[in-house]
Image (cartoon, rainbow over all chains, first blue to last red):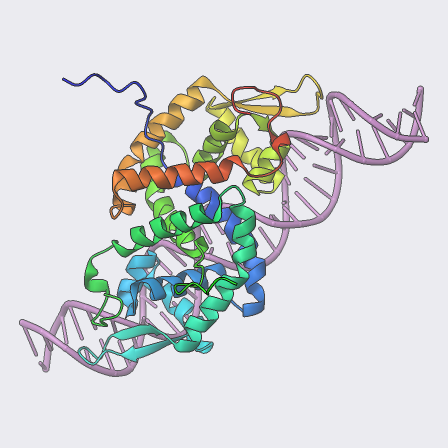
Length: 158
Length: 158
DNA sequence: TAGATAGTTTGTGTTGGACAAACCATTTAT
DNA sequence: ATAAATGGTTTGTCCAACACAAACTATCTA
């Protein structure tokens, strides 16, 4: 039997710290995003759409873990600003396929740029390399979630 | 002048993804933590106390970025369960120095253990090594925040 | 033709959290 | 020593996010 490792430190959970930072960022993002007419949760939806590709509202609700009725409202906001489009799925015309519009992608990029200062402040203790690491970890974590059926059939994002 | 780097990809912001995961974790944590009589935000407070050492309520409110009146309620909950203690600061007897009790530390460890399954699920796409990386990044980010005056005079955490 | 399913709308209730006001204990300034 | 400022507590009000239910349309499947 191998000797017990001397530093068997209890595995600390990231959850609480994660929420802690999410809160700090959200508070600041709220004000930074206001000129765009967006709220943090709009950004989340747009980001998910960009990261995971277009999906039906149902699977979007599943990913965001929001009640589907509330997703409707969220998408209404975004569609009103033409940041997303709802297209009828050709295979099943009951379905709405939600896609990020070009304008949506641009607006997302602009919003992200505006958020640079926010993250600079909140992640002051991390150097650019580490922030990159953090982003990549989150991105990877996001890519693996939920069954892959969430992505209808768009090649680019699947 | 150096040639422009070919892959000058726009720096993506972690904020939205961070919030996304925070939400996913919080929803699950809510039920896992219920048997402990704790809510996610209690865990955050305990974690901050453990990470940064004892601090006054004022600086705690600053770190958590919560209204101080709401911090009082939060601490009342925790003190009722003897997870924290409020001690009068000897230097300024108006101040309460909030300390994590031994019981608090144990309870926090137990809660974290209970959350293992939650993070296993949410971070399924990350291997243990990457989760460790994520945790360390968040920890480092947390250590550098706010002026160091938040920590009164306890050597272990400063 | 009868369900079941995807989405939408409306409405209700709960809750977290911001904010204000009034209060006590203590410290600091004049 | 008295006044003002500060740290904390309590209470109460208000709003936004959300979960949830119900009723409806359009579409697909049995």
